[in-house]
Image (cartoon, rainbow, N blue to C red):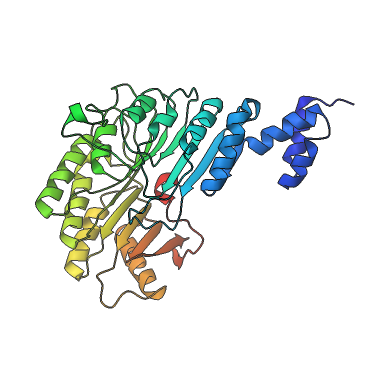
Length: 371
């Protein structure tokens, strides 16, 4: 007996194990369609071999490829430490990935994670694709192929790019000599990039409300120039900032105070700011009061990330950082969550009904984009 299409999908939705969903594929055509859609809707390939296996399947079976909405692929070794040692890939690896992407016409979320020392200028695999992404995590090298692809993606609202380059000699390089088209990425609201230059290029004339980036310069005069340029571009965004996270290779109290003052001076652009990081929490009492005085001017701030790596002795966990969070909230009562960074360790203190307590269940990596 044939069931309505909705019934097949409803039954599949309540099947908990993938093995059982696979079994439903063999019941009849109705269950096969609904089960295959559930199986291939979201694909996660955790290493190179899985990525090759999945892409070979999708490249050879276009019917199944049309079911894929989310594709996450890890290529290389997650333990890769940046030593430059190349991880060997099969000769036809990238060609198989390219053919698979050309078949996934309904793809909306694509995450390409590269952990290897080989050639990353592989954005040509995006040539000839017809899908329109909403979210794109890209570890590929910035080149003309990537720029052409981004120019063809009007629906992307969440973008991560690991590379951005401005060529010194545009004649002898594949790096594009000009940025994206003015009208490209019209709905971009969340941007994560490892170079402030990328933020400067992508933020103006776009509705970017959540930004995570990093200062590229290390010398203080150059870093001040970079800060000035970045903030001159932030005011050109078409929406106010809700979340701003700027990392630094070397944090200092004095520059963090300059950064905070610059954020406050943006006024209309940062008036509704809800997340701000990463700032060095001053050790001295008077300096900390000045810090709080600037911070309290961000009236809607809900979460702030502060670095205490230079404190000696380090604030104890949880008593010491909880006391500091309570102190901060005396001056900035809108703040409900404080993230303390001590070297590579992060401790989250959350205020619930006015009581501060350690929060061990929060994923600190995504707070800035979810707030």
